[in-house]
Length: 398
Figure 1: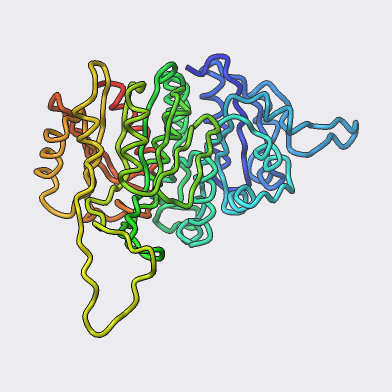
Figure 2: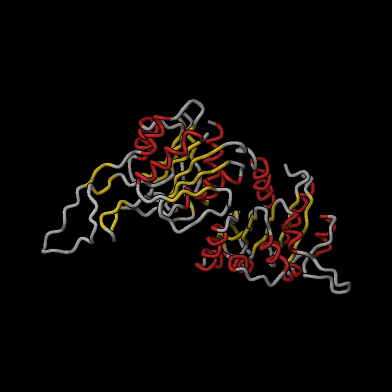
């Protein structure tokens, strides 16, 4: 799958840089053309001579060659690449990438890259667990970068914990899978819902939930990266799509979301109902703010909201596939299977708030997928972008 692909291999100044030679060799053996870009600190851990011999290309580290003045264009490199892989990515480089500190050739190349960027962090466990690093990685994810999570094990400090750069063979498999599936949704149209809905009580209050939209947006990004035409119907969230091909439809209430979905779904091949839709809405909207009066709280009468997934499930035509979500706190399996049947879904994604790292507001999720044809697949805790890939992979098999 990598034959003829152009890959930038970015190497930063960490002890794991020695593993980059093995990764480079795997890329070359697979038929890829690789340009190595090193930070100055990386040369303290592995020599450019070694990497140049393996790649068959001069290594780029500085903005220009000192003795000839030859300029190394980070813009040209960014346009040339089909993918950029930064392995290892130190805490320092991750911070520079997250905040646009373009003080070396690698970061300027990253800022010019038009292709997908894969980041393989490598650092000591305390550095990886520090809130600063977590925030910087979250920023990189929000920009559309793909984080290849580090493994746990013995580190350079001889401490045991998470921070080891993922093994070259596994990084290679990530790139291989990416190129294998990059166009597997080409010519298909997918409807994705994301985020919460807000049901207005008065001008300053609403009924809602804690959904941030991260899972739905990750699914939209994954589908778009694999060639799909994506319509993302989103409730109120603080994120925006990275892929410019995603068509964003902003809504607020459940009824607005239903109207948008009914307008789009008839022309779609797939629907993924990831939004956390409020089940109930106030029967009446107060035009003015409800004031505190006396000791008795106001009575708010609620009415049922439309069931968007069930509505689409009853209307889907032959060939359309519809996936739903079940976020549960108890009786998870029974509730998920009941939703799968009652809403006429082709698959349902179950996650439980009892699983640490799953649910609203996190960057990770732990899911089990059930399909209408009887398959059940449980997945480990992963980043939401990786979970999105698992969901899309399953949808394609329906």
